[in-house]
Length: 120
Image 1 (cartoon, rainbow, N blue to C red):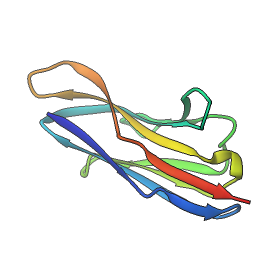
Image 2 (cartoon, rainbow, N blue to C red):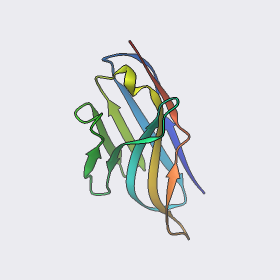
Image 3 (cartoon, rainbow, N blue to C red):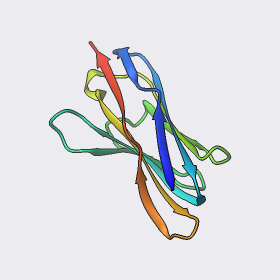
Image 4 (tube, rainbow, N blue to C red):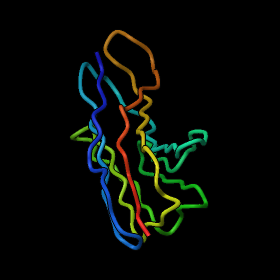
């Protein structure tokens, strides 16, 4: 059984910062790509950032230069540092981890989501 637990969301004023965390636990054999997505009210879920197991990163144009994704392999945790937040960053943020659990092949797993609200 694999679980992803997210934390770090909240309410912040425009221009502020938040740091999201997503910890994977359970019978994990290997973790490959770790990603963050977000879904604003009435919109489709969109990809935000990704980090490979050799620390290559990629970002959506809308967050490039403001958000930083990182990972701690010893803790099976991925982070999203969000700076210079804008009201349009308001969304539920989800982590997505492509991993292999014991006795199984690679699969995508999703966190439960954490709310980020940016006020004017």
